[in-house]
Amino acid sequence: MHGGIEHRIGVLFVCLGNICRSPMAEGAFRAAAEERGLACLIDSAGTASYHLGSQPDQRAIAVASAKGIDIAEQAARQIERDDFYRFSHIIALDRANLESLRAKAPRDGTARLAMLMDAVDGRRGEPVPDPYYGDTAAFELAWSMINLGACAWADRLKSEAAALRS
Ligand code: 4NP
Image (tube, rainbow, N blue to C red; front, side):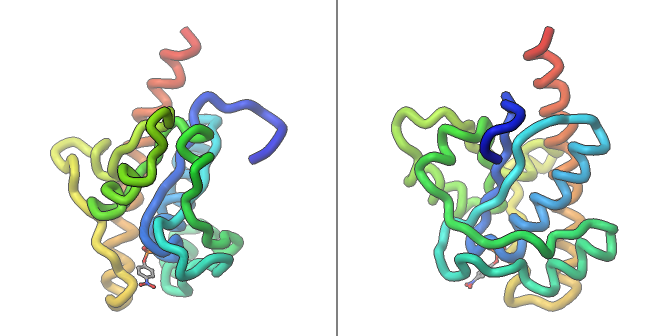
């Protein structure tokens, strides 16, 4: 995150608690970016502060792990002012979190704000439902939407990165 390679593309996934949906999005996108050879800064955060420092929810860890993706090392953090300058894209998991981001964004922030499903044809603006109070099936459904969105964003940003280089 600090030092090392300078990335022109940086993607921050944002949900409410940063323990269910955005950690899954970070994990899915990390795998998708790696598969595509897309080098970028990747992180996740919450708009709320309930779970600072917490590991992702065990159900999120399990659903990702079943797909071969390890998200257990992540620790929850809250969105901060600097994020609106450090990341080129801040991607919300639902509408309420997009509105929170808009309210928090500094006037001269450089990050583009969007929603996860915006990159998926025909599903622009669709929210990923919060699985926190749901069952295993809710986490499975969240994972499949999130993985679809993460792959679509990786495709889109891979094209944008190629355009930046040419
Ligand atoms: P997330 O899910 O936003 O996908 O991480 C939630 C986690 C915690 C709470 C709500 C949603 N909560 O109210 O504590």
